[in-house]
Amino acid sequence: MTDEADRELLRAVLDHVLKNDAFPSVEGFLRKHASDEPKLKELIARDLLKDISGRYYLTLAGLRACDTAEARQQLAWCQALLPALQMAWRKARGSFQYAPDLYAVLGVEYNPEGEYGVPLGFLMASGLISADLSENTGIPDENINLEGLLYIEELDVAGHAEKLPPSMDLAGAALLRVELAGYRPFDRFSADLGSLTVMIGANATGKSSLFDFLRFVSFAAQNPLPPEIDPRNAGKLLFHAGGPDRLSFALNAGRREAPASLRYEVEIHGPVGAPRVVRERLVLDGHAQEQTPPPLLDFRGGRGVVRDLAVRPGQASWTVPPNELALRRAIAPDLPTPSQFQSFVASWRFYPGFDVSPAAPLRRPVHVEENPVLAEDGGNLSAVLHALVLEHREAWEELETHLGATLPGFLSLGVKSRAKGMTIAVLRERGISEELTLAELSDGTLRLLGWLALAVSPSLPPLICIDEPEIGLHPRVLPVLAGAFRLAAARSQILIATHSPHFLAQFALEEIAVMRKEEGRAVFVRPATSQALRREVEEIGGEALARLFLTEELEVLP
Image 1 (cartoon, rainbow, N blue to C red):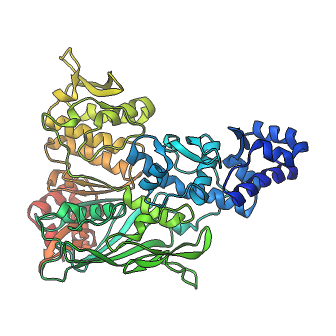
Image 2 (tube, helix red, strand yellow):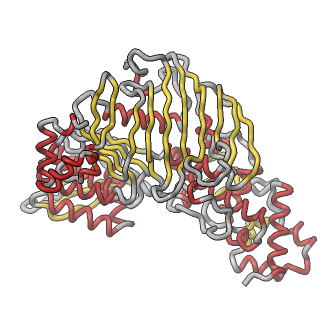
Image 3 (tube, rainbow, N blue to C red):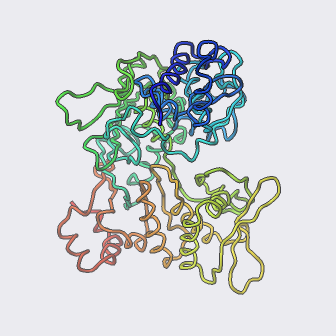
């Protein structure tokens, strides 16, 4: 139990930190609080305070015990900084030798004190990061290791940090709606997406272009726009044919059960070679209160304001280069909502198909990774399987069950260690005495293993786009694969494009969308809106969907 005397000591430490942007030295603090030394030792024993290298540090629990507005704000900032630090660690895949290296990856100006340095100190005192400390301030400034943050979704500050309004909390959020004009075949395009959306349509109707657009948005949330605007579009027509050299889009994201969502609006002008972001806004959409909150981002021509209603009142004026989104820089700890949205968009993953060629990285031993996410080419599949077998036995057993149901002669799956922290997956089959490494498996088996490993992974990106997963697979495995993706959609949002009637037949009508062209424009249609079609599918089942797909009847529904 923390009494008022304890709180006063903890508050005195916090007051020193906030006034000086430095953690107090034990010697100097005791000169003012000599009679409180026994209590300070007791606070250390209770993990509310730490004595590290001759300085006092509050832990997150110590901040919580302070029970002041300033302490709650610091807790909220630590929570808001979490996704940005996790992203920085994944980008660097190692420690940051010097603090400026970390700030460069975060995309913010180096400042060893204040809003970034102090929260790093609290996280270090709580055992979540490790670092060498500045002699002058005690703030982490060298050999900063953030690995301890990777497995954390939310810091233990519930009930004490300033709470975001539920509609602004992006934990478990999904991309709800896309509106797009001026990009390739899209003009006045809109699509409402579910937790699982399976897209069909003829070639050149916009399925892959929709994936490319979402990948472009994720890229732009992390990087300046190159001269070609979309780095994957070199040599292709970027802007909608016959239209001006500009594109605009709006994304709605949030939790499906929430009454409001975040709406992100952007307009980019060409020409290719000289892109300019002319407008950018992040607003709360569908807010039920009489007074609509002001935009969280509001920029025109690179100049604008950024704010967050949840932690700090007021706003900051920014100027960003013409070829950058302000969202890219909105990862400060006092901007939890824009920061969460930036992390949400930057975390999207895209899988156009795995590289299973004879020399592919997927077939070779790879370095063990902490909490790996499957690479887009599948190159770190063995690392993903290594993490599953060691840390997620339930997911591993689910994977083996799927493989047993789809691979004739399957006995077991395993991983083998190799020299210097390397690992490779191995498979055992009936009638073969030797284990088969990934290098020896068929292309189809490797593809199936990759898709199933992705589907059973406990930690998934918030949005996963998968292009034609049926390629190279026998029709009999498609029901199992569809079921695995449906289960994964409970933990992530899955968007799939397919040309397979057998695969399509495994999904409910409500999960299907049709992409088609109308007067040169891509259009997104939900066939479930047809009452006649619903009756036919209810009577016949998935076979009706397959037949209607083959006869193109699905694609011409009004």
